[in-house]
Length: 258
Ligand SMILES: [Zn+2]
Ligand SMILES: [Zn+2]
Image 1 (cartoon, helix red, strand yellow):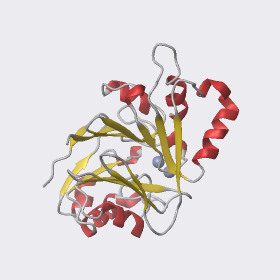
Image 2 (cartoon, rainbow, N blue to C red):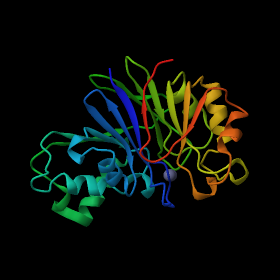
Image 3 (tube, rainbow, N blue to C red):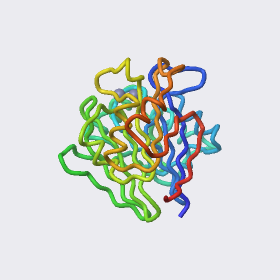
Image 4 (cartoon, protein in one colour):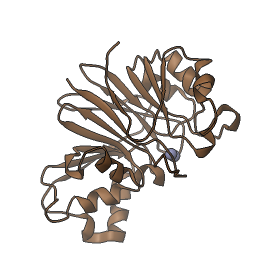
């Protein structure tokens, strides 16, 4: 089974030359799943060699603009003549996703709607236990994390291995359980240790989560500009002895089981 993660946006609400807002593409054989779609992430999708019509589903972690703004671009782009989609598109996210979509329709109306494909909206309900959706090649699990409400992290279990994506979160039990024995965990790392902000992780906290959950390969991402010029790997290494990678836009990680 071919499994790969493509970093579409390793940045945040504050874009830099090198880093766009949150977006991650997971490839599981022929399926393409986008996790979050911050502003500019659809452009990065094209730069990575993919088209909007390649997407099978888009999983939203939470409704902050740096994670969801390009939903409008995906829906509008999917109905442009000559490029229009015919296969279904599923949107997955926390409760509130349908309302979010309705509000987009209030603004853009029919420009976001197409008769040529089926749009499926799957709302997952926050609870103390995992919300689980079973697909043909993998199991998608979502768990509440400590950020805005509601905010999810995601875990994808495949026969080949386990991938976790934190969305935005502070240190919490939810993200530790999502990361348990993950082969690759993409964790947010908004600021260096000395600039910790509420609702977000630092390299040390991400390292503690990864160590506790026995993550094999930790990919730090979602960097605010103040992460520049700081040795994030050393801060993380104090607590975690597995493989550490600092994400860059358009990096690709094939899943290798250790
Ligand atoms: Zn964010
Ligand atoms: Zn956020």
